[in-house]
Image (cartoon, rainbow, N blue to C red):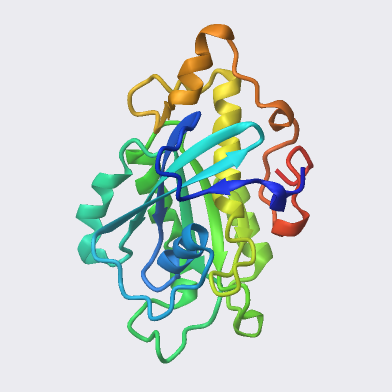
Length: 253
């Protein structure tokens, strides 16, 4: 099934789902974390975005294969003064969207670190997430603002090498145009589902960042193994994804 054919639902009043997953969105201030998340949840660009103060919460229910998954999305502030507050929300996270800015520093964003600095500080963000979140945390590195290629400061190849060295997924996206915005959230969910299927991750274990929803609980007694169909195929590796071309089970993941 093509990536764009996944059905998504964000507004059902009495929704049912198979799994509930906790995600954190992390990275330096000014990298576009809130705009990326807003485009994912509202399918539109967030004009006049302000600094996130502490943590903001949102959610969206997605469909991946035959599974309905509700994502709890915690958007964390990137400024140092909020670090002690935001770190407490890392606990029990199953997925992390780690964002940096690929572009050169603009005059408007002079109060933010340069994109080179936002990239160089990724290791610190990753270390904090892995120390505090689920032991099976799935991390997707996102190079944001890919629509501004002429202002690029961090090359795709460099970020791809960093992702491979640190065992995380990688792609680039644009919170302005919406290009590849859904991919990191879907990719993390797919990887988490594979861990459940393999038995490496137990949703009933405290701190896993995943729990069963009503739909899964109604079926759990009828099968000792949850099947994800085509989700079992493919290999995990850092990739440069394009939403319109990604097909689950291909070598891209």
